[in-house]
Structure formats: structure tokens, C-alpha cells
Length: 432
Image 1 (tube, rainbow, N blue to C red):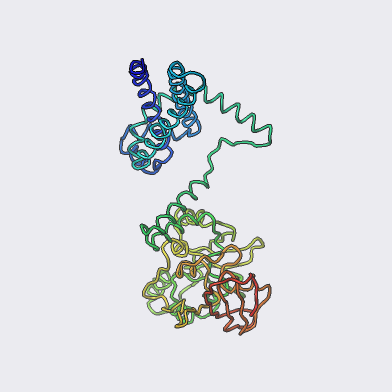
Image 2 (cartoon, one colour; image 1 turned 90 degrees about the horizontal axis):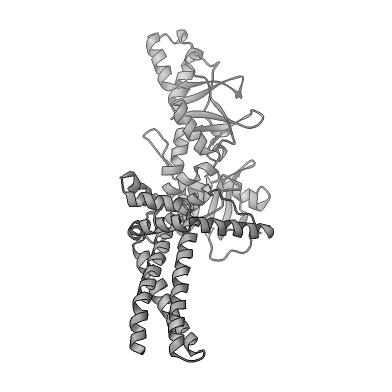
């Protein structure tokens, strides 16, 4: 009798557990599959990858259909086992034995084993399971939609509203998290990680955070004699130079060194005949709230490399170039005409000396630190923000796990600091 029962139960139970294992593997592999690789395979003509992308397009419906099918199989297998064993063992023993047996079988063969195999090669398993899952979604889709409607309606009664829109920011955070994880594992170099960070940060940064401040802009007075204009242009390391009249706020044009040399050549040495205003280009003014992603697109569309930044009142704040934006991605770009200097001067005691106007983002990138750059652009600005005052030389402040000592100050501007990492942070604005 027992042998006959086992022979009757085993084939059906094995079949149900096998189907349950397939759906468990499909759920795990499809949720863990690389969307980037699937999209690339689809572009290469892989039909299985195309099915995977279709399924991932409505992930909630896909998972609902898989769970529904999987529960039907597991409940069916448990009910079949209970009905058979209940006839062999009297009282509650049949229920207890069937519960113990099915818990072990479903846990091992229906959940852990297939999901472990699926997580080892999620992309390949997802492509292989896509036809079965696709048919499952077609069959159970209407039921799943009804369940989704009921769940959303129930949650809405408690004030929880689920949006069907895709969170675009989630994709950026997923990429950022993957890059950071692989960097910590040693698979991504620091330079490559910084480049990924730079690309992802473009839409979060404004031109005001990377621009050259108006105090540091090299300009030329348009009313100077031509000889002095040429001499000043040759002394600058830039090829595009703002021209002003009366005061530096009144920018009337942009002089390109190449246009200037061409005009001088055509004049055959007669500098008095060169009209500097005839060769200057119209300045391009942009608001200081423009984010870097939009400005990069504008530079490419306008085929320009140079823009002047103004605030809401139209006052000049600084300038930004295409090179400035690219440096946010690839780091500093120096050529043979750039001044050579050491921005970070490391000391024997483990501290560093930096200029006050050094951007926090550049310091973080060079030292692999995480100082906040959302409250100030420069290191000096961060110290003033945290200190709530303009410090005097010699003062020391402790915050973010580092000791900031003011070395030099020129009028109201901090020009040099000494930064020493410490093991313990004692508050935000603790003055030593």
C-alpha cells in the first residue's frame, strides 16, 4: 500500500516541484539581470533579450504573474501530498507529516536551489526563462491587474498612493551605487570612478559651482592703445579674452587671440589701423542657475566654448568654458601654456596645505575625501560656512573629521589653509 502510494504521488509531486523551481529561477534571474547588457543584446538582434526587456518594462505585472503561478503550484503540491498521506496516517499525523515533508521539499528544491543557480548566471537564465514567463504573464495578466487594482485601492484608504511612473533618478543612483561597489571591490580604478561620478553629477551642478569668479577673470580695457592690447593678450594663457569699457562689469565683446593676430598680420605692422572692436565677438551671457548638463548641450549646439555668467540682476559673476565642464568629468586638463603649480602640498606630518579658493570637488577627487560641496564651492567657503565667521590667521576648526587651520588671510579672503585628518570628530564647529 505504501509503495503504491509513493509511486502514485512521486511523479506528480516531482512535476509540480520542477515547475515551481523554474518559476523561482525565473523570478530571481529576471530581477537580477543586467538591463544594460539586455539592451545591448537586443540591439545586436537577440530575441531572448528582447523578451526580457519587454518583461522588465512592467516588472510589477511580471513578478505578480510569477508569484501567482508559483503559489498555485506550491499549494497544489501541498494539497496533493496532504490528501495522499492523510489516508495513510490516522488523525493529524498525516497533516503534520505532509507539512514537514513539503516544507523541506519546497524550501530546498522549489526556492533555495533554483534561486542559487539563477543568481550565478542571471543574464543567461533570464534569457532562457523568458518564453515561459512571457506565457505566464499572458495567462495570469488579467488576474494580476485585478490584484494590483485591489492592492492600490486598499493602500489608498490608508493614504498611500503608488505612482506608476518610473523614477528616473533611481537609474542614476543604481549606476552610482554599482560604480562605488565595484570600486570598493577593486574592479574599478579611482580615476574611472571619478569619471563616472562626474558624468552623473552634471545635472546636479550649476555653472556657478565651477565658474571662474569675476575676481580671477583676465580682461582687457578696450580703450587701451593697440600695442598694449596685443601685449596683454600675449601675456594671458587664454585665447579668448573679455573686453570691457569704463568698468569691468561692462563687457562689450570677446577678443580671440587668433582673430587679433590675423588682424595684425593684415595691417602689415600698422597697429593704428587695427580696429579692435571690429574683430571682437558678441559675448554670450548665461544665468548662474544653468546646470552643467544643459550648458554642455548648449555649448555643443552653439559651437562655442566660452560663456559669461550673470546673476538674476544681470551682474557679472564669472565665466565658464567647455573645458571647465569637461574637467568635471576627466579632471584637470593642462596644456603647455597653463601655469604649473601644486594645488595640494602634502606635508611630512600627514597634513596638506591648500589655497583657500581650491574647489571642494577637486580636493575630494584628489584625496578621495567626502567633504560636502553643497553648502560652499571652495574650501575657504566651507570653513566660513561652518565657522559662521571670517576666521583670523592661526585659528583652528574641527569638523567632518579634519582639522582646518587658517594660515593666511588677505582682507576678508582666506588664502591658505592647513588641513589635518583626525581620527575622531568632536562636533561641527569646535574651535581649538
